[in-house]
Image (tube, rainbow, N blue to C red; front, side, top):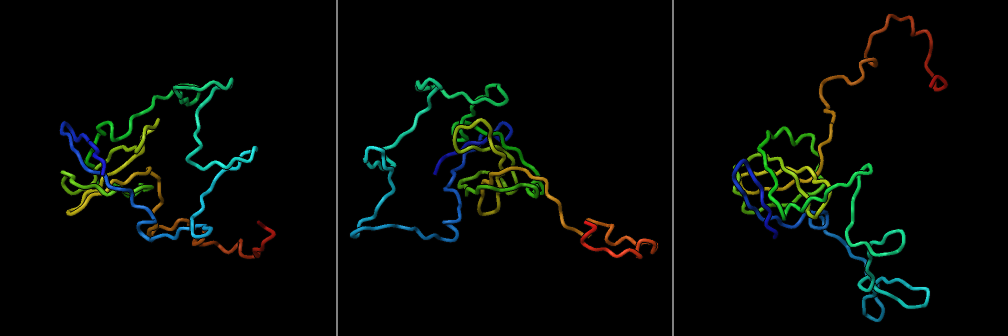
Length: 188
């Protein structure tokens, strides 16, 4: 468990972030394996000179157009440099209590259970990034009586299904003048 810090007003809050809830944990999974003589085989890369390399023997680096290694990587957006934000574990993220209805338009990508959360039950808005990044993701902390969850994703405008008719022209009454012409697929 990793410690994560938040700032609610002028009060600092610390909680413990557990492992992300994923499909493997919820539903289980089957792992494919290839064996020869009872020993598992691993993927590798066959080089042009016949040497086989495993994944552990390969590394990557950033180079400039001339082929020289680049020590510092610069990220640009529309030709302007973008500063890299520290991960949420290296800084205190602002926390704000919001009404529960704000969760309605939120598209959740990741769910992390939280332990030792000293917050009253409710919904809290914040930002989150597991690693250093240029843009922090939107997040909510949902605190219930016995447990709490960090929900990471993005806001999305959703249309609600209700009693309103979305296309009223299907139910619109006509005066009978257009009924003489039959509809067929050639009109489309």
